[in-house]
Amino acid sequence: MQASTSKAAAQLDADIRAWQQFVGLLQAEQAALIANDGDRIAGLADEKSHLAQRLTAVARNAPVALIALARSARDLNSANAALLQQRIAQTQQALALLRPSGGVSSSVYGPDGRTDKQSSGRGFAVA
Image 1: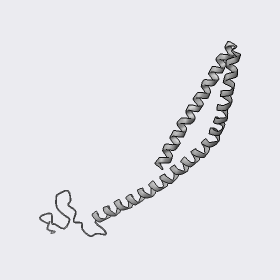
Image 2 (image 1 turned 90 degrees about the horizontal axis):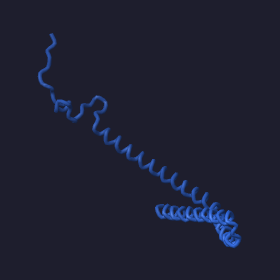
Image 3 (image 1 turned 180 degrees about the horizontal axis):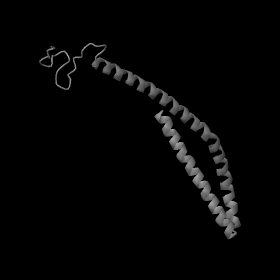
C-alpha cells in the first residue's frame, strides 16, 4: 500500500508540474500576442499542442488513480475498525476479570486498603 501511495504522490507531483508548465506556456503565449511576436507564437503553438495532449491523458487517468486510492483508504479503514473492535473486546474482558460479578466479593483492594473479604473492624450490635 505504501508503495502505491508513494507512486500516486509522485504521479500527482508530475501532473502538477505539467499543469504549471502549461500555465507558463499560456503566459508566454499571451506575452507574445501582446508583443505581436509571430515567430514566438508559432514556436509556442507546437509546445502547447503537445502538452495539451499529455494533459488530456493526465485528466483521464487521474480519476482512476483517485478511485483506487479511495478504495484502498476504505479497505484500510475497515481493517482498522476491526482491529479496534478486537482491542475493545480484549479490554472489556480484562476489566470483567477485575470487577466482582453477581454479588461475589472482589479481591481487589478498596479505598481503605482492604479487600471486601476482610472485615472493616468492629460491627455494630443491634439492640
